Amino acid sequence: MTPGTLVRSVRRRHRITQAQLAVRAGTSQNAISRIERDIQSPSVDTLRRLLAVMGEQLDLTARPMAADFDADHLADSRAQTMNERLERSLAWNRFGAQLAGAALRGER
Image (cartoon, rainbow, N blue to C red; front, side, top):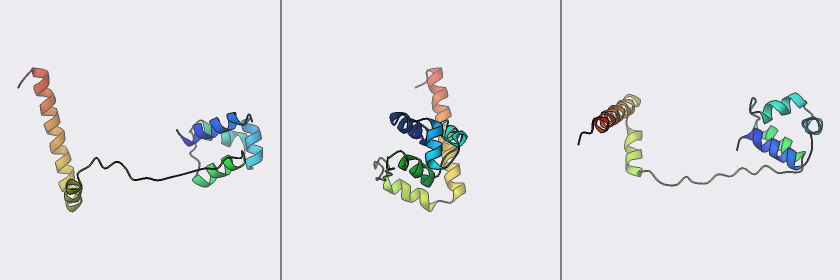
């Protein structure tokens, strides 16, 4: 969910117009429209303020990502220079292209 869809869904749930929200928040209806259409990305403070004037509280949380990576591989990558990491990535891309080509040709 984007900040714009969040603002729009909360605003609609409270049955207020963009203009009413703008007056409450001390901004313009045009600014609310731009946020809701994801043309303008609001700061966390702005998003918090918009939700607060509608009686809602912004709740941002963080949690560890799923550990679906190899810690040794990550440490090895961090030890490499940017050029070495780039070359490794390009080598994997070349390998993938060769593998895809072999699959298209029906090779084993």
